[in-house]
Image (cartoon, rainbow, N blue to C red):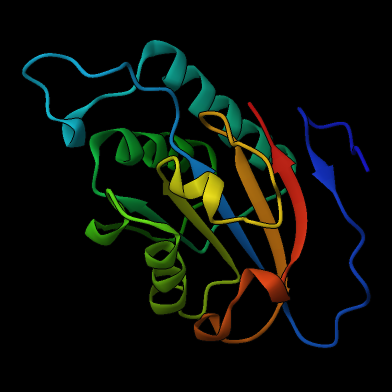
Length: 173
């Protein structure tokens, strides 16, 4: 059902018996296409990308999100997206993870399991096509600065699987 926040969709969760954790998987904001002399890893955000990252952060703030841990790829465009989010949202810790660059959904799942620790709300900022492939149940292509949010009844991120989580929301800037 639509809850009226910039393209936010949500589902109803049953009453939880153990603490609910939240995973937010966000595609980095818009970056210009390849530029001669600039490696893919070093591509910056565009002006539009910076505005969209700020809007994504504002949307998450409006939803009352507080981030315990933010994990991002080491690529310049994901780090910048994460830094912009961190200026808008309360973020306790940010980690740049090399394994999230130029890889597939399994590496993202492994990062969640290995780096989630005790975080109640975990944000992963990454790349397409992986972020669109990771939430297979969504069946949607995520545009730049869009995010998928799952709620999960669990105490240990090491046991997380998208199939055991509730797709709670999809946000777009």
